[in-house]
Amino acid sequence: MVDKNSINHWDYLGLAKVSRNEDGSSTIKVGKCEVAIIIGHGNYNRPHTVTFPHGLSCSGAGVAHCGSSSTNAAIPEANRILGSPNRTDDIYSGDDRYAQGIQAIRNGARRKAEEICRDVRQCCKKVKIRSVYAPKGDITTDVSKRDSLHTETVDCSQYR
Image (cartoon, rainbow, N blue to C red; front, top):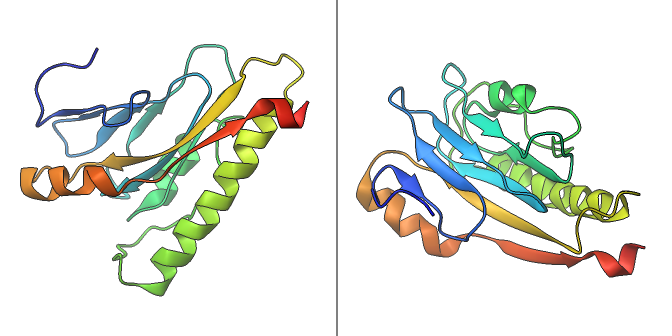
C-alpha cells in the first residue's frame, strides 16, 4: 500500500511506487516482473533514484525526460532499458527528439520484457511494461498526467 499522501506519492498503475524527494527528484521502486518507462520531469543535476527487488534482474527501467543520462547511468546494466535516451539538457514534449526518445525507449522496454521472459530462471509468467510519471511537484500538472500513461502486458509463455 502506498502512503495516503496523494501529493507526494503515486501508484497509479499498481506496481512501481513513485515518491517525490525534497530536492525535487523522485524515488521509483520498480516491482518484480515490471519494466518501467519513466517519463515526466527530471534534472541532470538531481537524478532520480530507481530501485529494484533485491537480487533479481526480473525487472527493468529507463528514463526519457530532461537530464535523463544521469539517472539512466545509475540504473544497473542488468536492469537498464537499452535505447533509453541520454540527455543532459531540457527537452519538451513537442520536440521531435522527445517523440523519438519515447519511441526508442518503448521499443527497448519491449525487448527488455522479452529478455526477462526468456530468462532461464523463468521468474515471470507475465511482464508489465508501464509508463511511470516522475512528478513536477505541481498538483494540477501531476494529476492530469496520470490517465495518459502507456501500459502493456507481455505474456512470457510465447517466449519459452
